[in-house]
Every structure is written in structure tokens, then in C-alpha cells.
Length: 484
Image 1 (cartoon, helix red, strand yellow):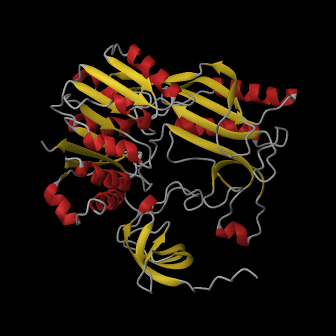
Image 2 (image 1 turned 120 degrees about the horizontal axis):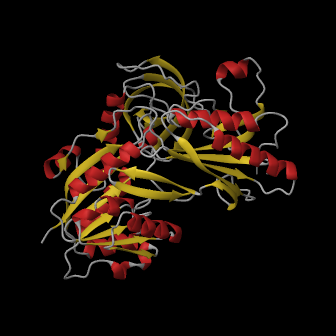
């Protein structure tokens, strides 16, 4: 039997009324179902082409034309807007972006908790959204990809511009084999853009080793990661390539590494290390084993008085200034706490160390052993001797949670998907004074918050922190107090 042909649904017009997950615009389709559209600012009217219908839930659609702009429209500064997919809110002023993200975050918590938005505001102290003044130039980490095909805009496509060549930029959304070729990124610092130019100059000419072909799984240059300590000026560059026994390939990496180390950068920044990592996996992700290091294989970043040594794999908040605001908010949520802090999903220990001077004892738990080693080193470097760390998956480390008779503060900063069900149920029964939940995905806090409430935890305060302007991401901090 042949495959059933999809029923054609013609384009339609839609009023965009709010933001949804990932910063997509939300409106109502002609059939009354919700429609989700990327690059669709609230307040605009669009003509869209439906691309997918999820049974009983609504539509996904692609923007074809903006029929009416939002009341406060801004011209996107980046020529790759809508192509690279990274900054889908550039058409809105920062304060308007934050208002809509704030509303999305609040609704994402209220609905799973069984409240209307008005009921939640009556039960919970909802704080105004917080964030940096900088709308751009805030990212301290960026990952570029090499490729041999690029995505074209409509004008280039109609003009017959070739999409084949050598490119360096970002993976175009929905196209595993296409690169949004980037000569300048507005989210990273000027120093980062200078380093991007060095990468392009050394790898995009015909005499350089070939760039990666994700269709054939061939080529040499694969990914480049730039990491920068905004408070220290230290930069580290990680070069990901396929493995090669050719001397000319190794020579090309050597020349690029030396050029990066010698590059004069603005704002008193400098490259302190270049790490060469080999990756022969067919998966198009930046991973692999280090082959060679020029200079240091780590760099330093500081948040106020606390310093952090970060290696290639170390997780750290991608906005340094935003991290300070987020951690100040967590410290505020922990005020008047018990003397012991349990730092769950602690990563490199960044939260616990930042608030550590307010406690007599810190217990950190994290699944990644390398992160635990970083946490221990960071604690030692900051003379915080009262912190202990355990490498374990949280669901296997429940014995480390506070005993029933112990009153301790809890900070939970889980992955995007939220708490493991076993962990959520254990935390619901644990003691705490208070429990502070940090969420990079607001619905996770709402879902887990409902489980915590079953164990007697009450959500008393809710903060939103905008770490990533121009994107749909927003961080939540919820303060839960045990109902005794």
C-alpha cells in the first residue's frame, strides 16, 4: 500500500498574542486550535504556512510574511536573523522581550500547579523579571561548526547563489547539513569576533584541510569552541577535528593554534590556551579526546569574589554578568537559612561556592566526575574548606539528603528536563529550610513543584532572570518552604 498523501492546508493569517516554548509566537488558527510560529513577535499579524498538526493540540507553522508589525518593532541588526535560529526575538525591544518571557514563565508554573495566573499571584510573591542591561555581547561561550553546504536567504536562493563551498558558522535549524555562515556574531564579545575571523582566515581557503561533510562523514575541520572569562580576560579556544595521520593536517592545526595565541585582542583579553580535540564519531557534536594543548587547558572566570577554573568540559553559566544576577537571586532566596546547604546537581560547584560563606557546611552532589573534580579544585582555590562533594547520579545518592531530624537548606539546579521522578518524590519527603529550585525550563519547575507540594512544600516566592536576551530562554528561581 502506498504512503498516504498529507492533506494540503493552505496558508492562513494569524494574530500572534504571546510567546511559547523557545520564544515561538503563539496565535489561533482558523480552526480554533493554537498555532506556534518561530520568528513571530507578539503583537504582529502574519501570513503563515502550516507545517505540522499535532493531534488535538494545535499547529506548527512557518512565517511567510509579516502583514502588520508589533507596536514596538525593531530592525534585527544581524544579517543571519531567521537563518541561524539563535536570536529569534531581535524584532522586539529588550523590555518587551522580557515582559513576554516573564508571562510565559509564570503560566508555565501556574498551569501544572493547578492555578490560574491570578491565583498564583495571590498565593506566591512574584518578583519582576531581572536581567543585565546588555541586549547583546553577553555570551562567554560559543560553538561554531564547519561545513561544506550553507543555508541561503530568499534573495540568494532566487539569484541562484551556490550553497556549496567552505563555511564556518551555526547549524541552520531543521537542516543538519547546512551552515549559517557567520562572519560576525552579535551575542559574543568583540574579542570573540576577532578570534572568529582568525578561524575563518586559516580554514576557509582552498589550501587548508577539508571541512566536515555531515552527509559523507568525511573532512577534517569539525567544530570550534570559544570560551572567555569576562571578568579575567582569559580566553580558551578548542578545535575539534577528525583524526588524521597526515602531517599537513597537524601542521595546519599548529599554525592556527599559534595564530590564535598571537592574536591581539581588544578589552585586555588574551588567549591563554588552545586545545586540539579529535573526534571520529559520526554524531555531529563537539566531543572527543584531547590530542595536543598549546598554553593552558583551562581558564579562569570570576563571579564577584569567587574564582572558577574551567576546563574544556566544565559547565558554566553562558552569561557571566547574568550569572551574577542569577546567583544573587539564589542567595536572596536562601536568606535566613539553616547552617548546612545541600547543593544538588552542583556541577562545578558554582552556586554553592558563591553562597558558601553564608553556611557552615556545603554538600555537593553531581553525576559527572570531571565536574566534581572541578568543584573540589574551585573550593580549594577559594579557601572554602567546609564543602564536600560526591560524584553520583542524584537518584542513586538519596542517602546523602538531609535526615528527617536535620534542618538544612537545599538548592536544586537540575537538567532542562527537571528532576528524575525518584528524586522529586524523595525531595518531597525531605526536610529543608528552604528548598530553592533553579530551572532553565519553566515547565519543569511547575511539574516538579506540584510533586513537592504533595510532600508539604509551599512555593512562597518566584523570580525570573533573563540570562539570554534575544532568545526565548528564561531562568526561574522558586523558593519552597516546608509546611510544618
